[in-house]
Image 1 (cartoon, helix red, strand yellow):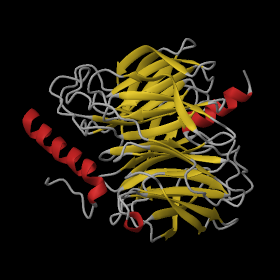
Image 2: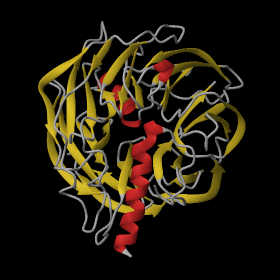
Image 3: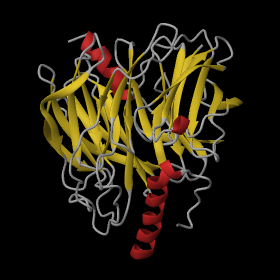
Image 4: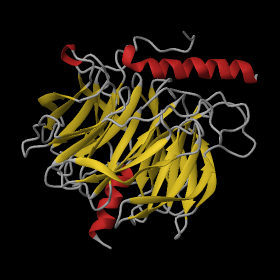
Length: 421
């Protein structure tokens, strides 16, 4: 399909292969208090408590196999941010997204496939984290209730795990027992919607950024700061859905209104709540925009306030924005740009509005995820195509990133999660 390297990617990854083909063609063509705490957890998709510095810190890296070996495991040097490789957890196909529970006892991972146990669905696995070594022990695996699961997050109460299934477009909720065991899905929602526009109305000139506007494709789901609602994105339908969440049963039900539309062809991808809980930010994949919404915590509603390009002024051609993450103090937000291969930095004003600060090269190709370590002093860029993780230090006053010059070899890295154990 493309001369861009994509070894051994299965059918459920057709979209990723397709994106690479499009990219190659484009290049050729272009020669309160509790709420605030919970919001901070949702903003970084990390539900861990404050790290216990007396315990070893471990990093777990999800990958696309076979370039990746499964879930790679590292011991983290807290002073330098360096990652020392340990024996990986093998035997799981495409563990592309990970999340650690708040007590840092369990790690949950998707298997981004569409053939689990003879079905057309993917799967989710729970692993116990061994104290002292960080080794993983499989607890159990369940059907994800949709094809190609790509995103996991835990509800603030820790009793439910949410998943977005990209290929099928469904979102689902799973009960989590005290011993980490996952139950079968207690709620599944399969929105139906017409396909979004093929080209992004807000895209930069010359962009060929088009992907999967052929029907529903859920890309993320996160709980609201107070846990009463959930927000999910649908890249294929250009919609951001708002769900009511029943904290007793884990049931999702459509909110009123049930969704907000993005600009045509934008491809909403990931969202994060600001630590103050008043604003939700969304990165779009095809338009490469960062969108700010005011969040109505009483009714779970969203009102768009601002939309900015994640690319610098004057940029023309194709790029796919991928991830957004807040600084620990909420003063800055960072966005990864694939093909442009930069991390863009924005400042966040008290009214939620954004201002571009600048960008820094990722030091690699196709940054799928960027993530801070638990201290907020180091950022990791998972550069999927160049098969490595680049490590940056963070100036806490200005929020600016600086390359440490340290790289860690990992085949097709796709996510990173941390645990003190």
